[in-house]
Length: 260
Image 1 (cartoon, helix red, strand yellow):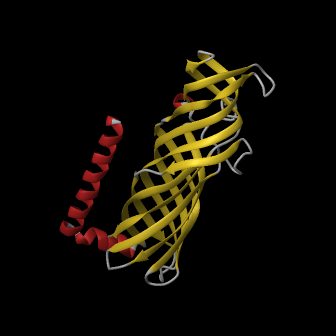
Image 2: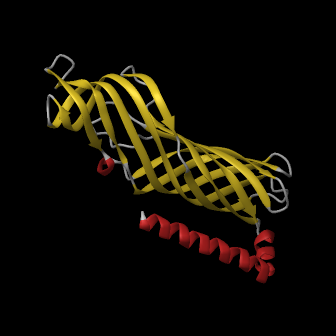
């Protein structure tokens, strides 16, 4: 956590320095503009979920969902391809959190967990029927590569792939008020009042997906933006078996931007 805070502090100082440089060296920005380059910084939040697609039959009901405050800060460089600045390419670097807290009722949900209250204690695995609370809070360095199209002087549309590198991960939770059948759905039944699980060390370090969004220039330098990021590979490796289905990051990132 201290590492993530340090990264955010460094980026804040870099952004502050960039704004200071704009005021002190306008000539450099003019030269960049003449070369078709444009610089933007953004700050916003991610709201969404880390979810299987489609929702498996084992998940019978979502009791509660809380997205939390998942912050994101980003810097972009845009290279415009034509004089009218209609089409361009965007490269960015984004420091972001993606996470949620959920409580669900499940049936025959394959789980690996540590029980400390119930008819069976210690490490168990099998098909769980009962309730599951899950906490997800992952930090990433994300690099978007997008094509940008200027619809009008105020509106931009963007689309392209992104890659993300996990810098800190938490995927853990509690299974409670249910029973587990060890091995398979016909195995020995054991009531479990509460058990914990933690798959943080199993999270995939490298992820990729698609990023589509729009940005509206409210004033000369201030913009409002929204981007939908859709993960195309699971947050766990293909050989991960402690959860029987793949889970994907699907988040809406929105906030404010500054255009140099």
